[in-house]
Image (cartoon, rainbow, N blue to C red; front, side, top):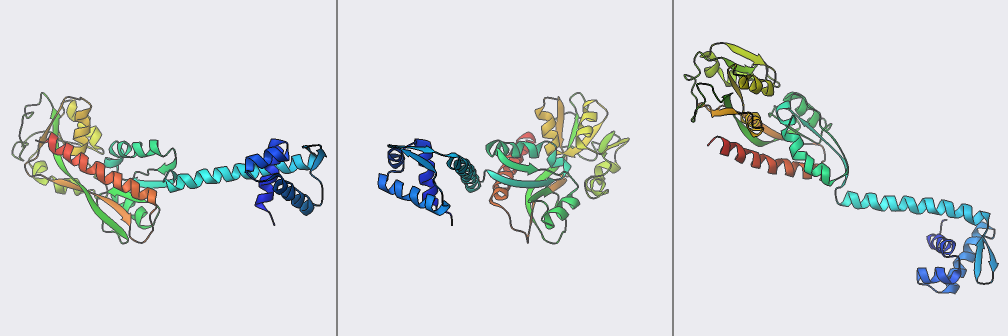
Length: 305
């Protein structure tokens, strides 16, 4: 069986070139070093050194053995580093599945500080519908999800953000003024809306039905970003979530954002599996998502004052 102390003594002698220097490095007596070397040679059934006075000259077998010992110590160093990273949650993998509304800009801003801090960590961010995200989390394929809550067995849905729907319009639009808009204000206006919204094709129409029913022309698109850009071009009033509207406003696009008097909202939830264990790393990401969500809602409230 491998004797760790004998290997340690052998390594010290190879690197120091003498028993006395090896003894000083290991803080033991010279007789102890000589004894462990002799035991190692006896176990191997061969000599490893040529004795010339106080010096030890390694033979070819000693050189070959030392190369293997170096590989062993290099592996132990890597293992120690890995264990340290694991203890500090710097090593591992996390997968966060998110709906497009959250994934396109908000989620990268949330996870970037953690990814910069944990440089050895791997991450994956699949972007799909809320229904897909829920199924992925329930199956344990994603550590956590951010999406609209869906009735899915095995998923814990923690309320995260209630995003108001708002009207976005060019700064020179006749309706670009302070205060909330009513369905009557939008009568006859060109509305820019989503043709489908995440997992339910009728979700958006059901949510905004009073505004839609009183509108004139409708321009439909699949993404809120396209809707905001069309509004910036003066093609109508875009009805989008407040998070997207705020992100466009922060880019200095000159868009006006107005509340809707009916105050329709989209609930965003933090999804986790009810029956699958979570890593400490995933818990850190969940804590950061909660913190940034609260911060985002405060920013939206300030925008809509």
